[in-house]
Image (cartoon, rainbow, N blue to C red):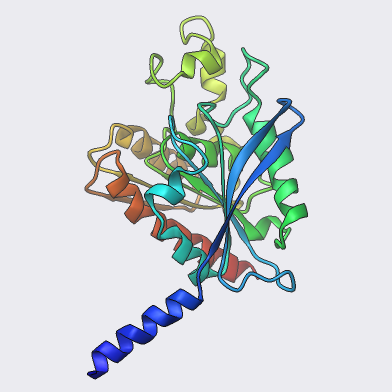
Length: 270
């Protein structure tokens, strides 16, 4: 057996011995009176004698808590590589907000006030905001920035991939009118729940931010506007564009850079 084959064999064996494990949990939401499922990815060697930073990873519209693991199983390798917990909660079609027109939908409350404390209680996490990050794709990109800007005491870093960071140009899409009411009759709801309008909540360097979007994505224009708004207000952030559309080929590449950004943030914040 030549030297290359021996090396590949050793890598294969090592990978087999060190592999992330996945829990599927149900977290009861008092605010919504129902259990909500989540996937929790634990890195190889997870031990209750150690504590770990956490990345909350949000899915897009029409997907669920299991979609990330199903479509990008390599995120388990990233959990191993960066020694982090990854939590993928179910956000249904909520846009991760508390609906002002339907009190049954309180996903902002669930995410910030119920899920995070539950994870901290049941897993060996580092409980400082500087060891907690959130990111997501599409609806989840909106959710990650929305939640982090409104709850800067909870999250220290945030990201977005192909995020719907300004929902106002899409009044007839993705159940938004069900969550916020029609745009024509409930314009304030749309203004108050668009990420781009929450930027004034930020002070420079209050959050570590990484935002990216494919140049052929239908959300590209609103991401460009968010980038310009952050620049105008002197808010440091990473902004990446590359050729790509709104699909899993793009996100399966983007997520590794997002997790690397979070890892570097965690390491620097120690």
